[in-house]
Amino acid sequence: MLHTLVIGSLAASLMGLPVLADPVPTTNPPAERITIEIVTVNGSGCRLGTAAVATAPDNTAFTVTYSDYLAQAGAGTAPTDFRKNCQLVLKVNVPGGFTYAIGQADYRGFAHLERGASGMQRASYYIQGTSPTAAESHSFAGPVSDSWQTTDVTDVASLVYAPCGEVRLFNINTELRVSRGTSDPKTTSFMMMDSTDGGVSTTYHFNWMRCE
Image (cartoon, rainbow, N blue to C red):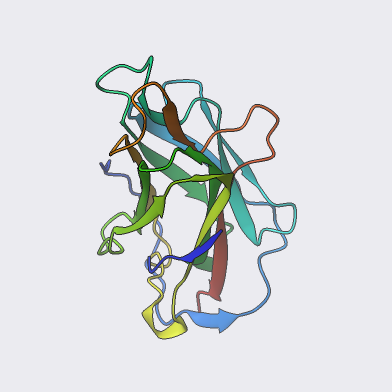
């Protein structure tokens, strides 16, 4: 199933660096390897130690992998299990002379929804000090038992770049919800955005600019 997605915060600054003006678009990512650090993790869908970040070798994207991100409703579930969320704050270490925006975000998972049950996935992200992207919700209706994916592609004119010469944190907010609805109360429905083998992950694609 493919859906189209129109897609808290800490202060940090790098003292002594000038703010460079007029970034210039480029299709080539920096040659020097970027690194990403998890600054804070908060939420029922990403307890400490259950979220990991990895960058692509060619600096075109980074992935977030969860190992315990599951919302469920129905038989054998707790009242709070129907909603899970995650708030990640990341420090993106970018080589000098470059800045970035996120041009596309892909969210993946698996859903098992009984007839009469429904699910919802929501996501937004923003660079510290800029306006957040709109948090868009995408619904799923049972019966379904299959992988799901939502994809956000931001129009080039709408891309929001981190300011040149500054360190700004990157904030990600995601949420999963499941409603039992009219499904058989003896059954269980769930949506997950986790992976035990790294095969399911969310991917954020970079757009790069040179700072001159």
